[in-house]
Image 1 (tube, helix red, strand yellow):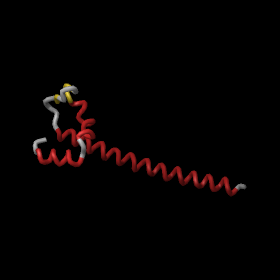
Image 2: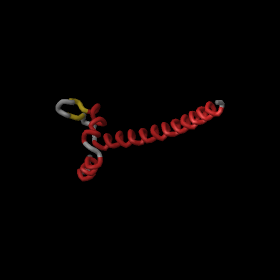
Image 3: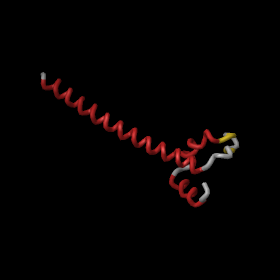
Image 4: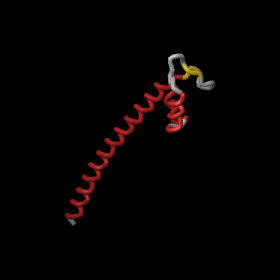
Amino acid sequence: MKDKNNANNMFSRISYYRLEVYWWDIQINKTLHIFGKNACFENVIIRYEFDQKLRSLLFKSAEIIEISLRSKLIYLCKSLSSEH
């Protein structure tokens, strides 16, 4: 990252260990943590933010499905209990 203050800010908000997943594949040597010449911290942050947005969309979708299933289950249980 060209701006070290911005990089420090990112590390204060997002831990090193959480970000490590997003730069793992752009390392040439994973033992010595040597990166390819085209690797940059900005791309790691872009990956992280994309993943964050995708996760948010998936959980929102899962919530909609969960509420729908609960509603149907409640209706089914009510219908079955009314029959007795």
